[in-house]
Image (cartoon, rainbow over the protein chains, first blue to last red):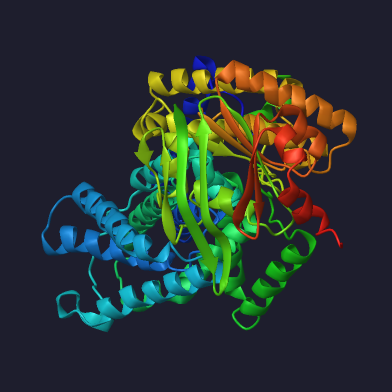
Length: 317
Length: 255
């Protein structure tokens, strides 16, 4: 699955270069006014959904723990960041850090008791916890209960969005492609065998859950500061379900798959907005078709990356 | 000196006593067989030693420490590794990754070093790779390192399981029917392998096996288990002629 890693300076410079080019190009398009509001909103949604899908894929795809509470962690992050920026008028970076920490803490508190459960039982428990977070928020007057918080400043600019996506992918890919990542994957493969080979499976399940929740919190903070308004209803079960659809569609255990699926679903949802009557039907038909013809998801558990491109370029290594 | 001492071990499932007052000791670098008819409780004993089940009563002491009731990963880190009766490889992962996962417990770099790709990470990964390759070399699996484990032929999967167990750096290696499903030729090779790894890694080996040629061929001492109790103990020669053992396997003589 993975080769031994050496630091390759040339490759590193090329990759950084590609990122810089993408970043500058979009930044230029935005500041020159060539990208209208509609495309900008979709671009932000794509970024947020990539973060959500890649982080849920760490839990569902690599660790093999079916979690249905991702929107709950997103809510924790969104509210924590808004309390920092809108209520306390602290800089956005403080809001982002608070969002990550609060969501990671929530992930830890929820993960420790529920990760003893397996399969369907874990799915139900995380679903329940996700809903608890939402209902608790609905009943806290400090954050305006069901009405939610309005008038949040729009701080999620392109540099923040792009930077967050890059950091999320980098951290999760680096984590997965390490000895710790192999321990996480061994939990998915065979929990009993992993435990007997010296892997503290509970520890790695909780680790994956906390890291996944942390990035969901980051996505929540970006979301809140892009769309001006947050209310508990936004982070309901359907939101968790949307993220799960991206992960399954992309292929459980494939980060590139999660990215592709996040882009695909966001664009699809946006494109279908012109057909309100049949939107959900078309959406469902596409999902069903993909699942019938590619039940393992678009990418299976493979990655699209250096090695694939390397082969295209005739690099035999 | 005894590396492991098991005293009064007892385990029951509902009303059924699977293991009843099991007592045994394993000497340093000994090769011990545990045999008995089907359903005698042999695998249960292995599961109790490795922490998969918690014993109802009794103590297991390993290297002078009480390890009774510890979680499996903790027991593994104290130096007990095992293979399984029905192969339990990480079957969708490569041969190399199977061994590298077993090496994880001794990983030399911290989590953050992996996330930030510090020099320590690259060095640690290179060391892991080197050691994994050494194990694969010993087991003749080096040129299959990038194959998916489930695509290996049966005999190689068995060998990979032993390689993976050894990669956890055990002092005691527990083999649950290592020769199951092997032909006589493969069994003979396995016997050679078991002898040589014991030498090379200074191991104590405890094995369950139904293939008597293997048990009698390599084991220095044998315990015979029937209905959860030890009915005989001794050298292969003694076991072969033990009346209770013959009765347990073949039934009593009608006189």
